[in-house]
Image (cartoon, rainbow, N blue to C red; front, side, top):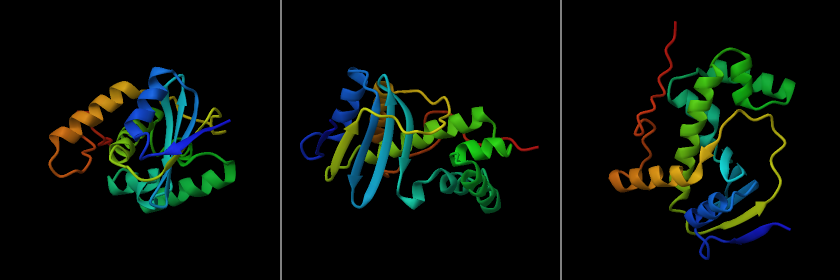
Length: 176
């Protein structure tokens, strides 16, 4: 039976600390303002994150950062449909990014999503002890450490915006 609740009763940081502390495995779905966020955990570590917000998709973020072009994104989306794989895997299969580069970017994407979820106070959450049936990359983020970094960045930033490069992990990918 899934655990469900209202974010006015249990905040996102509290839910994430619970996930980490009790080493939960499953999928957390947060719905707020018409947007659905999915976070998957294995033994308390974040292994997957996604958002229904079209501005926050992996492809949009990679295009925005100048890492891939719109054309490259379209090729990856076509391969995704053909092979029933995630866009991240398609970009790797097409040799547009290495797995190491993709995992690094997915880590930063997850941090950005948590940064924005941190302040969400209205909405609902559901935790189900099932993992998504996806071929996932080896992303394992320590949620407690991630929460600490997100909190520090929130304290240090005046704009309220997430700085992708604030932790010193640069996203610029050298091209030949």
